[in-house]
Length: 111
Image (cartoon, rainbow, N blue to C red; front, top):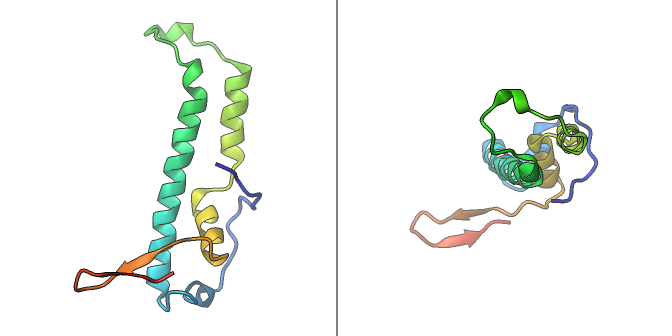
């Protein structure tokens, strides 16, 4: 997953900007939250895949070895912007796809 460089800090936002596309700030927050969950899950899977070669089949806790490459991989993931910040940036830059199903069962694309 390619990561864009964002501030790790939370910035204040004008809530009116969140409702530009949806006309509902709560719907926008829900869309952002669901996208943040997707990003988080993708990051977890990528981290697990990159750390998998370092797993040992030993049950002995005394045999824990610190591997420099493993520490660097973990540090890299800790430095990334939080999934919520990434999802918010995607939403504000109109890079998030979302849709609202019709009440009668038909689907309509909203974005």
